[in-house]
Length: 186
Image (cartoon, rainbow, N blue to C red):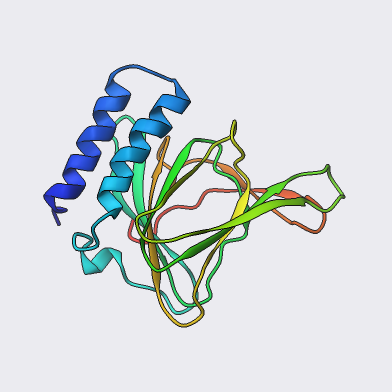
């Protein structure tokens, strides 16, 4: 299924940013963040097939993967009360809230065998954009801000996130385990 023109414009804009050859993360996050803010400013473009909640697990629907794996775009669909484990990405990520609300708790490892330190938490509302990266802080737990309705966010990652080996963490003891997320629809 072809996605609407507003999404195609976002992908073309991200492609232009990366085609410029820059590896300047602050520039990518700033310019990409503006594009994502424009995309999530409207909630009339995401096809229903990429907005379906699962009764037990959050969904990560692949919307676009760059042919050279420079970036990918997914819709995260959160059923009521769903959340991720504490995890990292190992690449930059832009998060744009389309519908509902997300809560993000950022963590800092304190060493193997020690509880992770909770740095802060924030809420993301429709139209807002946030970013994470290994240089800015990349370890967090994300949850649907609502216990009684679905929330949806759009994420752009600096690689094909469904293929990238990354980590989940036990916040009680800092233990780290590798995982590859894959996609709900692939």
